[in-house]
Image 1: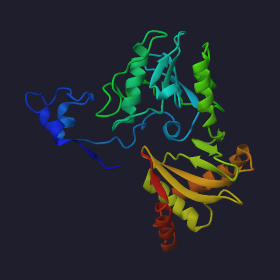
Image 2: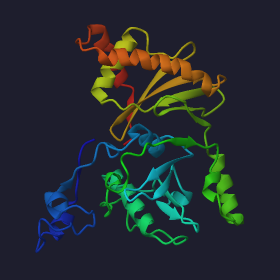
Image 3: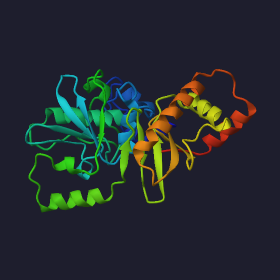
Image 4: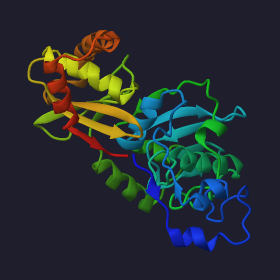
Amino acid sequence: MASRKRSSSAAAAAEDGVNPKAPCPCGSGRRYKHCHGSGYAPAVIRPFEGLPGEADWVALRELVPAATAKLKAADGRELTLASVLPGGAPALVRANGEILVGCQLQTSSDDVSRDLGTAVAAALEAPAGAPVDPGPIGGAGSAGPRLQEVLDLTAPLEVTVHDDFGFWLEGTEPGAAARAGLQQANEAILPTVRLEGLEAAYWVRPGNERAHLRWVRPEKEEQLLDALARLSAAEQILLGEGTRYAGAFRAHGLVVPVWDLPADIPAEEWITPATEFQARLDEALAETAPLTTEERRARAGLLSRQITLR
């Protein structure tokens, strides 16, 4: 993703009397010389890099409607990561002290990890049952730490996909407005299943005619594209009869290949075909020979069907 140019007027306004090593007046948390003092703030291409389950972080941020995962803070306290919280809230602390952090926020800055880390840090400081106030998130930049600084990086990320947002109200006594909001949110959920035994592979059915497999891949884009091109040229990129390779998303530095699937076949029946595809992909990833003419042509076709989300 190309760097986004900062407003020259914002930079000029802060020039007089600002120590280049001091925090930038914009509140980004960066030093002035690395933020508005430089004239631009480079976007973090892979904000979840270094976190256990990076591919699932991307999926929860961009693809999965209702899911949770347990997190552990660097100080040992436990938190619950939610794909999204009511109203797109960054975090909340229940009366019993349980901390929930939302992955899908209403706004974002050039560093999504800092946005979420800011919310985590604020939630860890908030009293039980009190509102969480992380300050401004997104825009010019969030002021708190990155996720990599506040989380235990040895704890695995184990995702649980839910059929609805009932986890929003667990342990509470919701009023009529909360129940109505929950019902409205539930009506927008697409049936989603995480395929067991496969990292960040999610089956989703948006309608009665087709389903999809969206598989967030951890490999670097160029390496993955070469491997997919080899499989495509060898007619080994499909998952079985009635399937179609639809293209791919780019999201937070990772590639998310997507297959069209027949809607009448349950999600669990795609575990074996996807596992077999993984074996073929592993072989293609290990291949080091230059691409053939046919494989280069296949690669160009694959590249033309990629869309960048973030």
